[in-house]
Image (cartoon, rainbow, N blue to C red; front, top):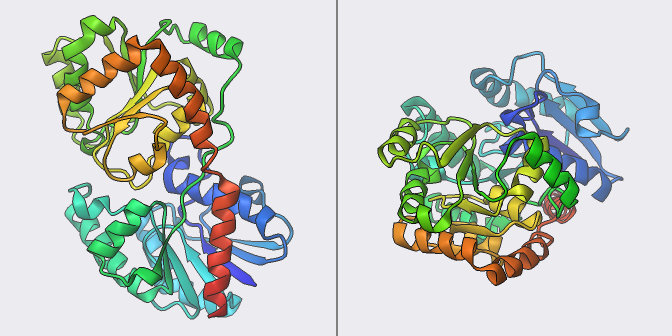
Amino acid sequence: MHIAVNAHLLSSQAGYRQAGVSGYIQQLLRHSWAVAPAERWTIYAPPGVTRELIGAPPNVRLRVSRLPTTQPLARILWEQALAPGRLLLDRPQVLLCPLNVVPLLAPCRSVVTIHDLAFLRFRLHTPAKRLYLAAFTRLSVRRAAHVITVSEFTRREVLELLHLPPERVTAIPNGCDARFRPLDPSAVEAFRVRNNLPARFLLFVGTLEPRKNVPTLLRAYARVREHLNLPLLIGGGKGWLYDEIFALTRQLGLEREVRFLGFLEADELPLWYAAATAFVYPSLYEGFGFPPLEAMATGTPVVTSNTASLPEVVGDAALTVPPTDEAALAEALVRVVTDDDLRADLRRRGPQRARQFRWPATAAATIELLRRVAAA
C-alpha cells in the first residue's frame, strides 16, 4: 500500500512548536515505520524537516516544500491549491491529514484526524482563523473517507457538532512517550538541586490561557495554602488572556507561594513531573490531555478535572473533581498533599494506567484503518 501523509505541521525547531500536533505526527510516523515496514510512504513536509528528524527508512519518500509552509497562509495554499496536483503525480492510495483539514480536491481517498473541537466551543482565535477552521473542518470531514479522533470524548464531539454518521468516525487514543516513566531518585534529586527546587511542591504544566482554568486553581490554592505549606509552581508559555492569572496572583497575595516557570523544555519535563509532590491540572476542556498522562507515567500523583477526555485518560489512577468547583479542588489538594497512603496508591496506579497508552498501538490501529480505507 502507498500511504501519503500531510506532515506540514511538523516542526524542526526545538521548543513549544515540537509539542502538540507536531509531536503527534512525529511519534505516529516513527512508530508506523516499525509497525508497517512493507508499506510505501510519501511524506509532505515543511522546510527544515529531515529524514533524521522522523527516522525515515528507505521505503519513505520525503517531499519537502519550497513554500514556507510553517506559515499558515503558505500551508493553506499548499493544501488546497498545490497538493491535488502533487497527489495526482505521486498516486498514493490514501492520504492521512493529521489536523482537521484535507485538500478538498484530493484525487485519492483521505483520512483526517480531529484532536479537539475547542475552536467551536471557545473563542480561541481571531475571527478570521475561527471562520477558516470552522468552515474547512466541516468541509473536510465530509470530504474525507474517514475521521480519526484521539479520544472517545472527541468522537462524541465530532458526532454532535459536525453531524457525521457514527460509522465514519473512529477513536484511536494517543500514546505516552517512553521518556515518561519512574526515574532514578538520584537524577531527580540532582535536578532539584540544579533548579533550586523545594523538597515538596505542587506543579501545573500547560499554556496560560482561559480553558486551562488556572484562576480556579489559584483561588483553590489560596483557600488552603496554610494547610498545604508548600508552593505552587506553574510551568507553561503565555497563550492568550493570561493577564488575569498574574493579576489574580497579586490580588490573592500569592507572590511568595506561586512561582511562574515559563515554558518548560521537553527534555526536562519528565524530571519536573518526577520532582513534584503532586501534579494539578484542572482544565475545562481537553481533546486528550497529555500532561496528566505524562505525570502519571512518571509516578507522580495527579489531581485533574472530571470533564471532557480527562476521565478516560486517567481512569481510577488520579483524583478527579469538577473543574469549576473551587472548594472541591481545594479539598483534593489537601488530600493529595496530606494523605501519604493516597499518594503511594496513586504512584502505583499511575504508571500502570499510562502503560495502556502506547504509541506502537496507536500506529498499528491507524495503519489498519488506512488499509481499510484504501481497500474500500
